[in-house]
Image 1 (spheres, helix red, strand yellow):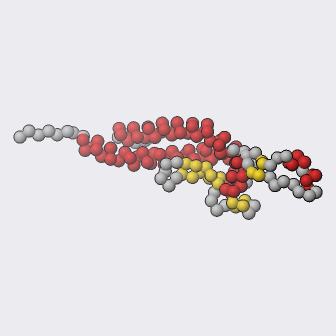
Image 2 (cartoon, rainbow, N blue to C red):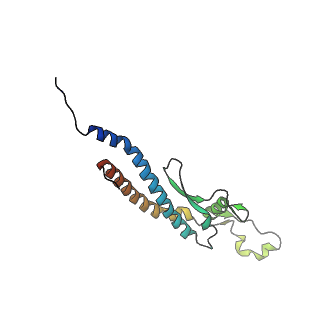
Image 3 (cartoon, rainbow, N blue to C red):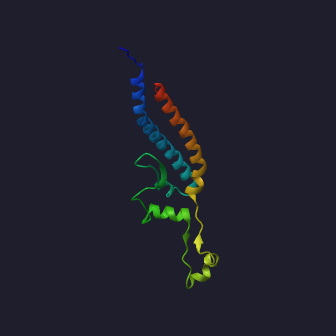
Amino acid sequence: MQSMEIDGLKEIIQTLETTPEVIRQARAEFFDEAGEVLLEAVQRHIGGSGRVAGVQESYVGSGKGYVAVRPMAKTNLDGYAAGYITNALENGHAVRPASGKAKKKRRSRAKANRVQGKYMYRNTGQQEAKRAAEEGARIIEAKILAHMEGRSV
């Protein structure tokens, strides 16, 4: 009777079966690190006294598929939600027109109906995010390759 055996096939199958978990773990580690880098960049761009910058946090999605910098939940600044204040600074906000005696005092704001936004998220994250994504892709690729070759990272 003829028989054939392939040496090492079980090890290859086992390596391939465990690869998705290695990818998930590497991606989660990358997003944790990238979130901290982006958080620092946004906080630097916000500037000021640090009150608004101090209520920002990096958040990794529940599926470990993305990272975002956003205001902390259930946190107040001067009686307003941190998200409300951050949104007003990011996108700008309307200005209540002066009335009565104040109308004469506030001539400079009389023509402006909106305050310009700082765009601290939009302007900050582009370069840092691109750089972090490229570096993260290289790190994840190296970890997967090391796993497939049986090396530790």
